[in-house]
Length: 345
Image 1 (cartoon, helix red, strand yellow):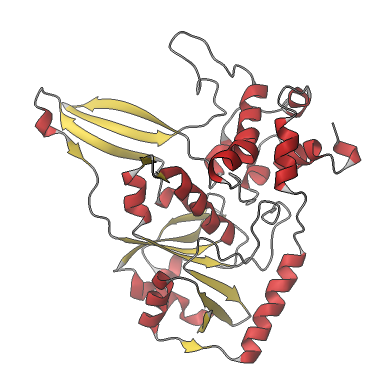
Image 2 (cartoon, rainbow, N blue to C red):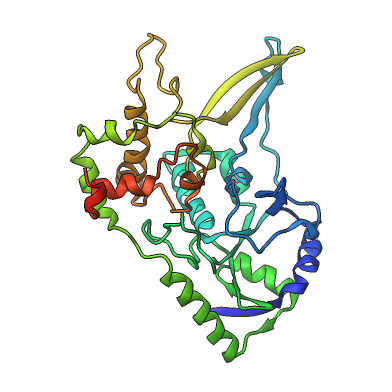
């Protein structure tokens, strides 16, 4: 693997050199929280952070987007598809779990039987620079889902913090193109030794809790179990977990007319909302919190393996930290796994 090095003091200059060429999304501080958002200057970027409150998936799946539009008349030739040629996108400072989440979204939106051209138009224009986690949060469980604090999966470049500098792991051709533009120096042996120490210390902080294949089997056999009612008693079906999740991808479609212009709009939805599965007959196959929360867990840790051979979760921990009633997905999974007696069901 090719390695380069860059001083932290040069990051702002680095981003400002790229900002005219790329639409850049990066972690910024707003109202005392760290958010992933589009930047106008490298000065806005915050890199000394644990993780952003939101995920960067909005760069490829906007929360609200117009797909087609037309004037309200009978002439079908007026229909306009909003699939313009995209300017290049850059995700900078994404955590490895978020970079890895895009590999999962690729499986969903780039299936050969049903390819989403809107997603792929942005995805093909995207370059991802991830920042390894030197201080994983207590809510992180990426190793349980197959990742790690310094996973390179889904990234084009991976930055590793070694003090005053970042060591850059060049992973893909897109990444190599970026580092060549900056004419960065190669690393020395002592710098690579520092990198290995940082990576090993971080990995030791997150131990995998369970084997996903065993978890899937136990979930499949517990579908009708009474445990679901106990575990979901305090769920509000508020959807916060799904809106913060980097892999959740449910959406709704609506047609709106404003001043004679009709637009077909795609917007985020959530399987936790009561009306998500409401049928026109009035029948709802998931009428209670139990069925809706069970669907979320089963989808991520059973059905996704059947369909994509990958968990629909990267262990970022946002659903743990943002849940208003402290419904911890790790405890739910561990309860079915049966590892800890105190929460076994």
